[in-house]
Length: 213
Ligand SMILES: CC(C)(COP(=O)(O)OP(=O)(O)OC[C@H]1O[C@@H](n2cnc3c(N)ncnc32)[C@H](O)[C@@H]1OP(=O)(O)O)[C@@H](O)C(=O)NCCC(=O)NCCS
Image (cartoon, rainbow, N blue to C red; front, side):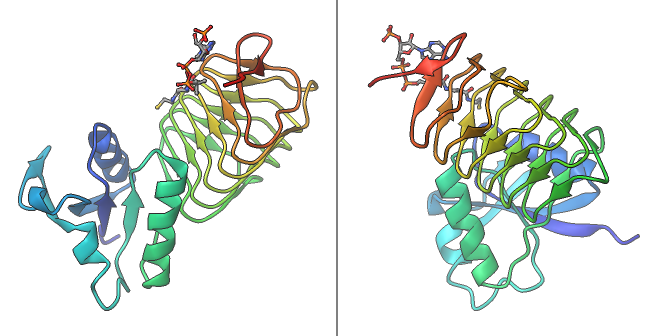
């Protein structure tokens, strides 16, 4: 099969992780794009920053180009992804070969699943959501669009995680204890969640409680 080219949008501390991921999935990295025009021409781990995001979005079309948006922040990643799609670019679903994703699950476009994660049967993941490494999504649960599920996070069965949720590293949603995590909620690192989480709230601790700011 011919090697497909892909561009990575966003250059930061985890760019190398995305380079590694894309190459592990059989892509050839054609170049990086950065928001800062002054960095054009630099090399990052041997891959050139070929242009700025601004110039990229001034092109007539992105038709025929594949992209990974390597931005952790959910709203920024989603805005960039939507722009790319509006201009005809493609954001493929990228799943590390060591991840175990059930053929009975439903994975939407632009989803990224890093190494060693597990998605069980009857689970679903919405557009532009990232599952970092070592995460697990149990059966009959769903993660909405534009979420970031950090490494070692676990989501039990029969739980609905709404859009734009950040789940911190090693956080856990306990099967049988909760039904949903509301839109835009943040689950603190290491939290053990046993109650529903309302939209726009932050929860921390074990058992997780709302963080009043
Ligand atoms: C929950 C979180 C969002 C809060 O961040 P913040 O709004 O900047 O809050 P602060 O750091 O000011 O902490 C506020 C209070 O919550 C406590 N706290 C913060 N994060 C906590 C956590 N994960 N577990 C328990 N307590 C926590 C702090 O000790 C502090 O308590 P105090 O007021 O008694 O001193 C953040 O700490 C977190 O866990 N983010 C997830 C990070 C992550 O996993 N990213 C993915 C990897 S890329």
